[in-house]
Image 1: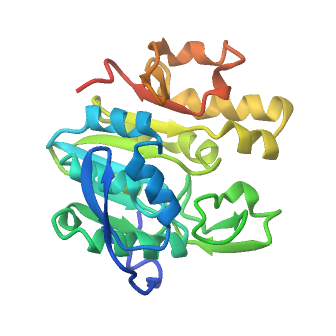
Image 2: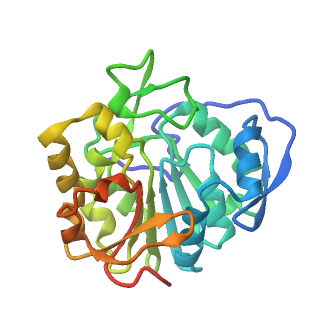
Length: 275
């Protein structure tokens, strides 16, 4: 297995962006300093209108023993929030433009920065390089491997596997894994076994039904959904909405409901998803 440094620097050249004027926003009730040029996004965060259910669910899962593995960290909202809640964080981001902004935002928070490590790679089932496409431009939060054949802007990223990430979990840590890969989760989830072996692992995953519907249709889509859920057989699932968690349902029963995939975000756990 290829060794992976906590910051991924052995894997690829680090991108940098010039710093901008810093400002403070409330991120799930925690003050954080932002040093990027995404003011519209952070205004939504500050107003509490960006994924309040996600932040509420994260806060309920994190303790001082939590290792928060942020797969698809983008410019850092969930990574910074997890660190502010007390977790150690591994932020994985394959888009070099987004990763550069992520690093700036982490550096702007010296109280949180020691808790957060960045890996600038794509999480993938194998170590083969992964090609991405962006709908608009790199760094726009919508880059996906499912767009590699259709997008005007593409790039290739080195990969890190779930098994390699599992090797970064320290003794005594309880993993909480957030997966937001703009459709790539359907390739990653079937290989997630080594990363979810800990009996207290919780997984907060976005399935992006719209992206999947655009890229994969018919029976192929159903087979992808079933393969994605297979590592979680015997687990419980709860939908995550703006007002919190839905009722628990057995993961094995999800695919029996044709409407399950219309709900984007789910919390998967072996037992009660609370602390």
